[in-house]
Image 1 (spheres, one colour):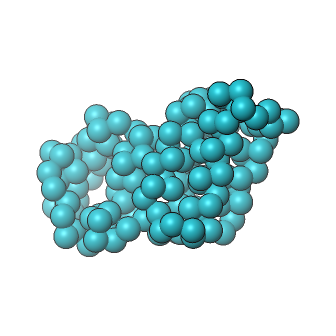
Image 2 (cartoon, one colour):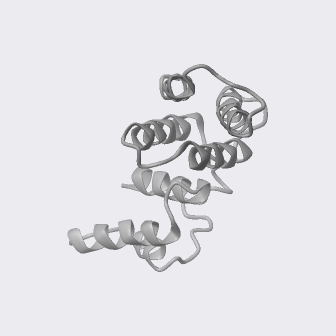
Image 3 (cartoon, helix red, strand yellow):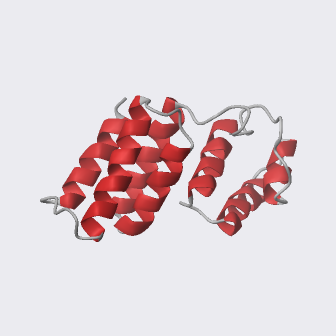
Length: 143
């Protein structure tokens, strides 16, 4: 469950889900389970997760494994039209700003963010942009 909660926290940090949605996810988990970790209440009440193993994103920065899961979620949202490319670009920007500069996943997320932004502003025209975005997200998920 800690891994799933970490994923929720990352999604919230980069703007894929709102604070209210994060709290709702935690509340639902608490309501559906007789036993749950104390930190789930901390998520539900928007309390600090400082020094909570696996959930403190400052002490334990976003990893390549986290990025693979997030890329899969982005691909799912994009495929189901639950996110537009502008929102995706912003989330990708927040991801690369959270990663080690120059890492493989950093390069993929910065490419996504820049490619979408350049196309939206009319500075570049990528043929079949949606396919290019999906292919790049698949590359991250396959790392």
